[in-house]
Image 1 (tube, rainbow, N blue to C red):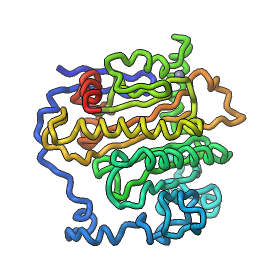
Image 2: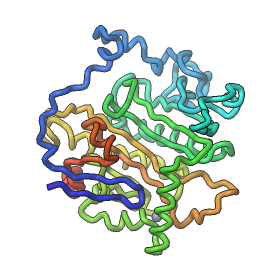
Image 3: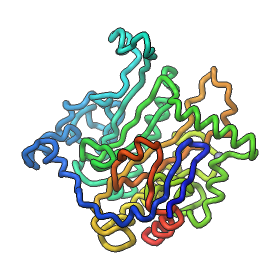
Image 4: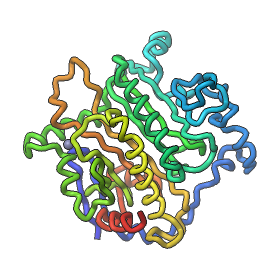
Length: 359
Ligand SMILES: [Zn+2]
């Protein structure tokens, strides 16, 4: 039986189709080295890692780093680096000005947009995953996310920022070296605006924040919770094992996490990442046989637009940050593209129960 649910705040629908879970997965994604070199030479990938220690000249100069006190900028003895993306989705206001006109036509007017696109190189090792990190190592990553988002928030040319992580080919990663990305934009994406409008409608109707209510209503979909944060499977989960994490306290910005709470959040996040990976592991802990143990997944942060003087919306009432972990066991296919619906084989109550067990 297929159930259809629509998220009125976020504006997307999901079809829960348990039968889909039974289909065999015969198409394994090719090894990244083979895909990139075409010749299967694994060594060429290692040599080509632009994020490796010693290859600092392959990236633009770092804007943030964790390194010993005496260590020089862009030298090789770092633990974590943040660098501008060499192939950015958006470029700075200055470079947009000097580039001149874009692809605007009479029938398709375009706006000039700009921003910042940075890469957090999360560790020295060219392989592995956040789920393998120690709490200490994960703390450095969370600290970098928080620090860069705080810097973006102070940049008056930016209106909103995205923090995301693509792990594995199915999640859109192009390099195996563990990294996450930050993009600051000169405009607020329409989807973020419409979500906030819907959150405002919910607030007007219920007198409460939709996310505060969502946490309270998690019930059997709750995966983990402590005094500060909760992790749960959303009622409208787009993919199997989707986890949403949010502060129990109504708080608009991830980068407002207190200094003293960074380590605790890193530990909480690490626990959820290990649950998700185990859920899909081959060892029979509840996942589907045949899935790779190195699970592909995305992390996305949902944060409000940065407060600006021109902002007339009652921010305090509706803005509550959340971070999502989205396991990626299949691609976005034709039906999803044509219908704008997600197809999920696993009900969130079942996913949460399995995730709790493997934690
Ligand atoms: Zn709230």
